[in-house]
Amino acid sequence: MAWALIIAGFLSLLTGSYLDNIRGILLPVLTRVFSLTYSQTSLFLVIGNFASVCFTFLLIAIIQRWNERYILTAISTGAFLTVLFSMKVHSYGYLLILAILLGGLISLFGAMSNLLVIEGSDLKTRAKLLCGLHSMYGLGSLMAPAIAGTILDSGADWQEPIRLLLPVLAIIISWTFFFLRVPQKKQEIVRQSSS
Image (cartoon, rainbow, N blue to C red):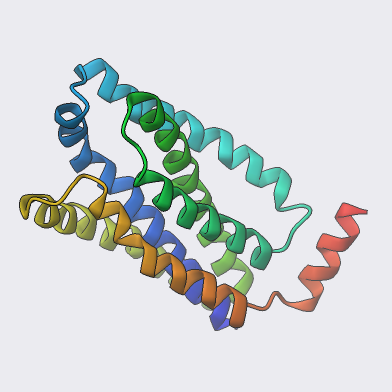
């Protein structure tokens, strides 16, 4: 088994789950901060969820050309930049761009987590590892509202619960760069399909 792939998969789903579930607690805050109607605020989720579907189809095309290490590095770096972008969001238009980016990242982290665990596990342990992997979504679902609520109750701005992901994303990027190795047979398959 390739534990580096499995750990990367678990971290990815935990991150995607946190991003997904943080949006719910941010909705009333965004409505107040940006003086939005409920329809405008719901568009934040609608656009994000639509982007999620589109980004998943994009991943299907990319997975044929790049290996998991490159893809996870790109996703994590994109997430890092998205968190930095969130600090500059001060208008509704930029908020909708953030919705697209968050929605896409949620699905990319989710899909990649499954691919990483499948690639890193053997048939004997795969089912158990996939069950464990999906418990990470539950953990992120518990953590996001609890952490975000506590941060927002302390008087912090709405971006602070998102900013909290910067160190986690730095860990994922570092892990991917230093420890993640794709098995040689997978690299050959990727090379052949992109030729």
